[in-house]
Length: 496
Image (cartoon, rainbow, N blue to C red; front, side, top):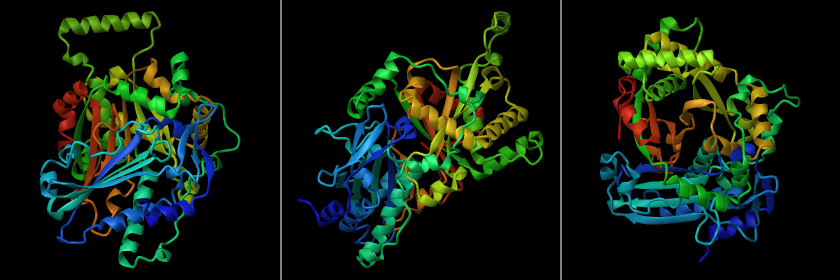
């Protein structure tokens, strides 16, 4: 039976088509699946009431009508969302009782596998359901044992939002929920600038572009028949393919806490090697650690026996004589456009507004003995490269991904110039612990295990801590190396 909230939604939606851009397509294989854990600290019998949670969710969709559309592939290889008010793609929304107490979940480090065998209503890969439909948003509310709390699993297709857009949706939902619980008057819901107009991206870019420079070349990968074939698949078929392939790349999940105290100590260690007035961000430090440890996981000259060192030097000399390029390491960083384009902030743009940046380093340099000088050099290089991301660079990346629909597939399928890479995305500034549905802030927020294969996601630590949580989702061999690395473990504390 349809609820009044769903009927009201159907009346508010206008039929239209939203053509997604290349930045959206780059992320279109994945969902963004997060868990939010709320404790009923006051033993409130009406804690986060079911009907208000559900009705406020559907009211929030009035502002995010893109999430009730149908995802389709365009003739050019891009994607579009068709919104038909007479055929809405209604979200997956369910609520179940879970025979697990909040305190037990907390003791298990908020491991989502402790909830149930079917805790998630969506996985990391964007897949069709039994009816052949891709749901763009999926919610599963878990009522915990003895009314001890609520765990909310929320997943949104990465094709239509990025981390900032996801956070905007959750904050809007929680705001509406609190207002509806207090007076129930929809008229009291404040207006908010929320945009899913892909034209906002173009409005931020310079009308005339400079010629692509060498920095863009680090992102170029030669394509082929396979990438073009996959790019022409429907989203449903492509999801099936990557879901099947996912089992071939087993990864391990580890959560680390990096404290403010550690970050301050790190800065003190490298301070004398940092140019005057140079600012090193927290993200620069974390990316420096991730890069060096990942590079060293391949082995270091110092770890070789004397004979091995001589052989390595001989190979290097022969390579130079033959003009063979040195081995490179790539630090891949997701750089947000929003701090560089106030218009996206003002409009409340929720689509993908992130561009990739590849910082190239000599692999051999990252494998030298770890000294304050080396740490400083890597951190400064990362900072300078990020600072150099300007409107011209962003425009060139946007042109590249719009003109080459299979671009996002190429690094997965073909050889790149890098022997090894480290990829991370920082979602720590998006106010995840401000998402309060009326019963208080969440005690823990984390991604579903395996959400970003071969990557690290940086989230804020819970309010009781000062620092960051780094969720590592990397191959098991690399995960073991991180757990044993003195450089990493002296700066990051394993949580689970």
